[in-house]
Image (tube, rainbow, N blue to C red; front, side, top):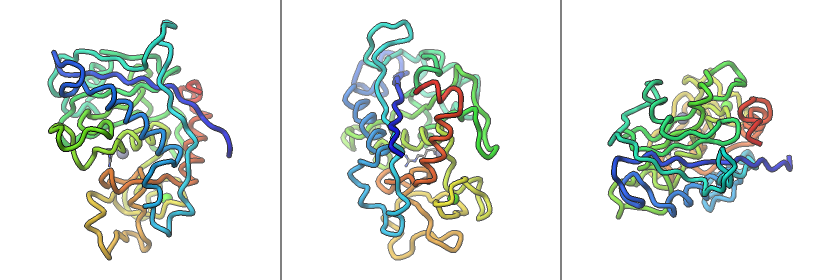
Length: 275
Ligand code: ARG
Ligand code: ZN
Ligand code: CA
């Protein structure tokens, strides 16, 4: 499939009150651009660590052929950098993923029509909450509920946004400093499920080439050693972006995930209208 999908994106930096650019949750432009690079590499399988996909999964690993482009025009047709910065008036948003009114409040600080842009909000969330995404309207498999248009998009914690800032920036989480949280969340935005589905060996992610997996793989794959997780009689694909390992452990989507995401992109109204 040669089609290259192009998706316009806008980053809304909803930072803590009074923070200047480059300070705390008002992350630098370089940090944002490094995040954009990561999603482009991961969705086109040009990521430098693609060779770390284990040999048994190299054949199923696939590009999704999606290019993310910073918006060049704002909703009024004016030129834009594709980055907005807003004083958020909250120091910590907790976990808005389970609180629709809080989620709506966060997103109301800055929102561009979700028919035309993939909205990416970056904010100070509670520690341990890396990000969350809204689900597409066209639901293959009957697993999710789409959000209201005004809440459509993905949210990530600033501590996991981008790939430049490392341990010398105390806020950045070293386990999640390669930008893979956004790769994962945009996967959900395109209708991809966790590789473990709803959990248990009989629950599916509707992708045949991701092996059945009874649970999410947590943590650091460097500790697995000679005993990689084997939850349903075959090796778990813990390097899949839709599993739960640390950023340095993730490096692949599969052909069936590409097919599923393309069906959603072409047929889910608010996704198709992005193209
Ligand atoms: N827990 C989040 C979710 O399920 C994100 C997980 C991201 N993992 C990562 N290595 N960055 O949506
Ligand atoms: Zn997830
Ligand atoms: Ca599967």
